[in-house]
Each structure stands twice: as C-alpha cells, then as structure tokens.
Image 1 (cartoon, rainbow, N blue to C red):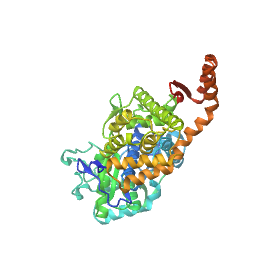
Image 2 (image 1 turned 90 degrees about the vertical axis):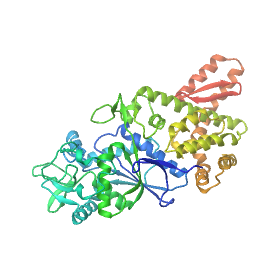
Image 3 (image 1 turned 120 degrees about the vertical axis):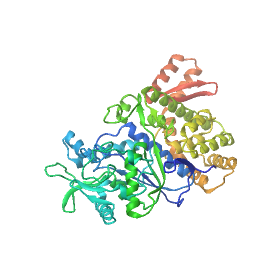
Image 4 (image 1 turned 60 degrees about the horizontal axis):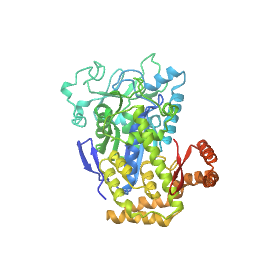
Length: 503
C-alpha cells in the first residue's frame, strides 16, 4: 500500500505523512461559531475532515481529534471590531447568549450525526477554557509579546519574527485599515486582540474579570488554549478553511509558538470554499442552504455528503441543486447495486473476492493521494459489484448510508475478501488487517437493514412471483405498487425479481 500523502499549507507541498506516534495521531479541527444554524458551506469542511479521519484509520493510525465550538469572542469582523456574533444572535432572537449557544450547538451536532461523520474524541467549548485563556494571555504579557490598550490586550506582531511566514503576508503593504479598523493605540496594523475589555455602557452578557476589568477572549485565543490543554504541542495535523490562513491560523501560530516555544502543528490542511454562482456560500450573503432546507426539497444529508466527496477538498466548487440531484442519483445507484449484491449472494454462490482486489488497491492509492475522493468515486462507478463485502468496504470508508441506515453472515467469505485485498497489494501488514478485521466484526450491523427490508417484503414478492407464474399481470402490477409504500420497486430479470430503492 502506498504511503499517505497530504498537501501541507506550511510548506505548500504534498508530503508523505509521518506522525509522531501512529497510536495517537493528534488532530485539531476549527469548529463552528454557534450563533446561527450551520449551513452546507460550513459542513463541507467537516465532510472532508471525516474522510481524513477514515483514511488515517485505513492506514493503521489511531486518530485523536479535538473539535472546538466557538461560543464567545468571535466578532463580526475578522479583526477586532464589531459585535460578538453570539451577542448579535442573542439580540436578534430575544434569547440569552447561553441559550443561543446551546441551541445552535445542538443543531450542529444533530446535523453532524445525520452526515454519518466520525465523532471527535473531544468537543471543546470555548467558554470552558477561560482560566487557561487568562493564563496564556499573562504568559504572553510576561514574555513581552503583549501590551495593554484602552479596549484590550493586544499581541505585538513585530515581536514574532515569523509572523508573516505562514500566510506569506507582505507586512509592508498591510496598510492601516486594510484588514481591521486601525486603532491609534495599536503598535502595528497586524496586531490583534488577545483579550477585549468591555467598555462602560457596552452590553456583553459573557464577561470575566482580568486585570481588574470585565472582558472576554479574542477569537484566536481559544484554539491555542484548547490545543495546549487537550493535545499539547506540536500536534500532527491542524485543519480548517482557506479563509483561516491569513488571519486566524496566522494568529494562532504567533500566540502558541511565542508562549510555548514549540511548533504548533506539523501539518496544516485547508479546504476551499463552496460557492454559488461564483460567490462564497455564507450566512451573511443569504445564498446558502441548511441541511433541513435541503431535506424539505427531498434530499438526504447523505446526498449532500455524496456531492461534497465527488470533488477534492482543495478545489473551489460551485454548489447547485442540479449538481445535488446528480449526486442523489449516483448515491441511489450505489444503494441499488448494494441491494442487488445482497439479494444475489443470498440466492446464489458468493462471487470470487479476487475480482475486487485490483479496484480496492486503486481505491486505497487514490485516498492516500491527498484524499483524492473524486478519483476514487470514478473507480467505484466502474467496479464490478457482485460481492457485498466490496460495498461493506466502501461504506466503511465513506459512510454514505448505502446499507439503508447509519453505520456499523458470512465471515468465511468476508475473510477471503480481506485476504485477497492483502495478497494482491502485497501488504500483509497490521494497518490493512486491522481495518479489515473491523469490517468482519461489523458486517452484520451493516447488513441488518438489508435483512430487515428483505423479510418485510418477502411475502409480497412471493405473492407476486405466483401471480406472474399464473400470468395474472394485473395482480402482479398491484403488488408492485404496494411496494411503493416501502420506497421500493421491483426489477424483473432473467434471474428472477429483485427489489430496489425508488429514492
């Protein structure tokens, strides 16, 4: 099996991934700001990073991932001006900031689960780390990297010699006011707030005392604090969107590396935007959808996941309902191929696993080539599909609900399938064996929904078979129509009748 390769924003190159410890690959994912309903532009990133987690597991690594929830400190400007997004959400909804954060965090986690995304090991709320925030700010003050103004504690970017390196910034051309509203008290236009003081008369429900004044953390602070507390430096992989590169991640690096004298992350992965007619999908522009809104249009969250994975995480992609419809049809086709495999193998002999070994090795090569799921999907479309365990393998990698439900008997054939993957790839190694051992262990969970469907409609299929034998086609058509209430139809072939999904 080829080595896993990833595009590292730090070096602007595709590099072989070499973790510090294969048994604990540390990953940090920049999570949502929970002030409004998450939209599909937000969720595309989490679909991509789910593929990263699954590919790491396929390579025999044990990922340990932390995802943060920003429930304070993210201002409406990417700089240090404007209203806190949680405060704005509370004002618009008439709820408290705590209620807003809890409600939208719940929506995010609900949709996260609906997309069959691998749960992170730790979900870290920013407000749970305020004591650690204050300790980090004090450390930066003591080390000479921070200074106080009337409205907050600021990081002096001129003191960190590598500040411009990560985003390839030209600080000479960063004019005052180009990115933030420049304050006369700031020493440099690129300086950023570590801690914001609450001005007299300013309404801000979330507040904590520091240096004798009430205030709240800057947006960038939480990520450095959470990483230091939960993972330690350096972490293996830091993920986020390309929009995080010039401001948020640049500031994270400056804070963490100045405070702890260690590299923050060894690999940085950034996904590109989703757009609509060339404009980035965003809440402020009102040009996006939530998963609930797509569901009202007849689309499953997993249809959207299919659409996302059809492209590459580093490509900017234009979303449309027409494109989503094509992804829905593709996913339906795969689900019906799975159903057909299940029914054929139930009735006849199992297909030879050798037929799939080449396509599986190509799939692994594609995933290890910087998570090239677009290439892999084309391979799956062209693969032979008479072996159910090939599809168990695919479902375990992508989590697309191909077996009729959320993830999770014939062990002899499954073991043969696994053995042939290893034999052809010439990689009888621990990584692929561990992954495939889990397939054997969980195969009955995958097949449960198919078995339940089969048992549910077996009487109807038997009656229809008898009706067709009697050439009672009116009764046969009537029984076919009855299947529709189960979202099923029946396909007549020379080998017999097979049920398949309608939607």
